[in-house]
Length: 162
Image 1: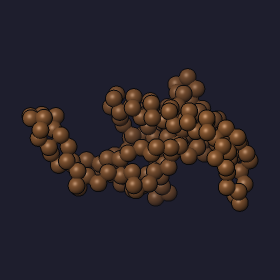
Image 2 (image 1 turned 90 degrees about the horizontal axis):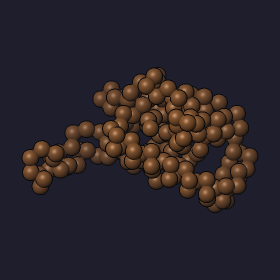
Image 3 (image 1 turned 90 degrees about the vertical axis):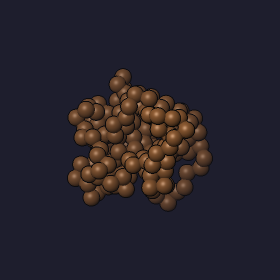
Image 4 (image 1 turned 30 degrees about the vertical axis):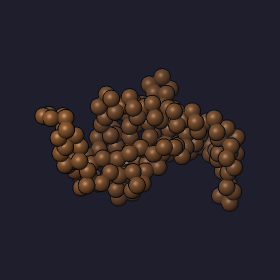
């Protein structure tokens, strides 16, 4: 499944696709599906959004007619039509959220969403990775961008409901 990033307002293209190899795609899909199950199991009591109220542990806000869902569903439905994120052209610091279609391609209307913050960015200036070539005990300095996915979702989108 494709992983997407929602970019901040300074980037003209609001949604970009993050290219993953097969192993990474399988891992990300599993992580987001597990987080969805946890979210639904622990926040089953849906209440209308109210800005002055803090939901209890088993509660979550629900908003119907969520306008931005159309863009997200379009990305999940047509992933190859979404431009690929190039970390050399657009900083990782411009990412605001990550999402996947947890039931795509069968039902692209269900999307798992998590926020993205600076704590998830890997500082590769101080990172060293085991090499794939040569001795297994040899490490090289990391030179590319990296990030972690969060351990929880902030929302599940189902059609136009968040």
